[in-house]
Image (cartoon, rainbow, N blue to C red; front, top):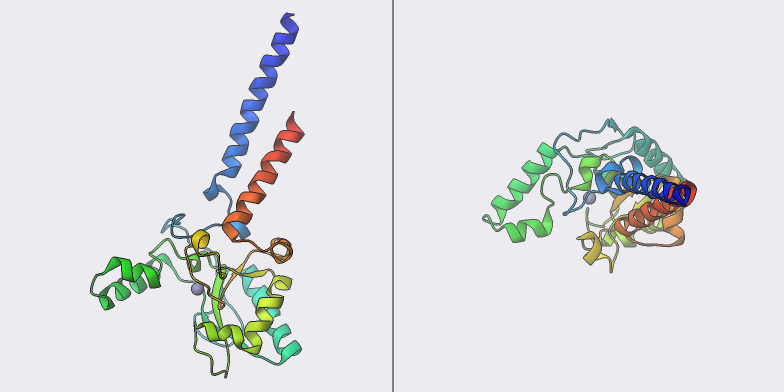
Length: 228
Ligand SMILES: [Zn+2]
């Protein structure tokens, strides 16, 4: 009798430890790397400063984390080769301070109306551009406006929507996802998540927020299965 109770008690203790370990893993800001989540609710600290390098493609503000930069170079070359469109950078990595300046400028333009400013510009710490994994792109020599929906109708924009996943990129803000992502459709804003994640998201499209929850649930389940 006592041995049953003892083993039940130790199983419960092991379960509790596993669970707290798993919850630790599941806490949003402990997962970083390719799946680092940043949005209006989950802001990152001003101390988060990734390693970045200038991406070798045309355009301005071309800094990204090294792995994302290499993937973007590969993607840009493939786009040119496959459909003859030259992609370019409009805006990649932005530091916390830079985002703060961008936000404050916008705030000035709208005479201090925060609600209106928030509609256009993320607050410092709330922009995915601070991760060094996101970049706004355009097509060189096209009539489409930079950072406009018309980018989706260019050859390059269409190609990226269909093929970005092959290089580890997703279109982060898609139509119909506004409630979850907090952003309207932005066909020009791409986010590096790595090839494996991008392939899964290509097969089952969903907002990154939901995908991260799915991944964490999977991890939790495998921890529990492996441990008990
Ligand atoms: Zn963007």
